[in-house]
Length: 102
Image (tube, rainbow, N blue to C red; front, side, top):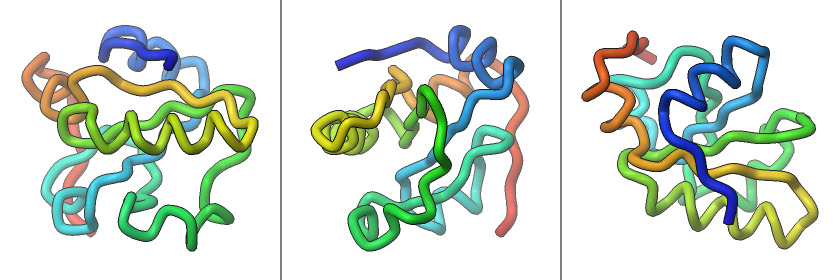
C-alpha cells in the first residue's frame, strides 16, 4: 500500500491533488484538511460516484486505519490511491490549517 506523510500530502495538494476524507460527517465537520471531499467509509461503496477522478487519489481519516481500508479497496478496483499516514490528527498536530463546519 502506498502511503505518504502530511508534508508530502501538503505538497501534493498544492499541486492540485484530490483528497477524500473517509471519517464520519460529525468528525469531518469538527476539523478537516482544506479541500478534502467527504466520503465516509460507512457509505463508501454506495458513494463511489462521489469520489473525484484523479491520476492519484489521496485518502485520509483520523489516524490512518480507515483510510488504509479504503486505499486497499480502491487499489483492488484499479484506482491509484495513497494513504495519509497519521491522518487528520497528524495534520493538526503539525500546525497546518484546517477547515471546520458542515
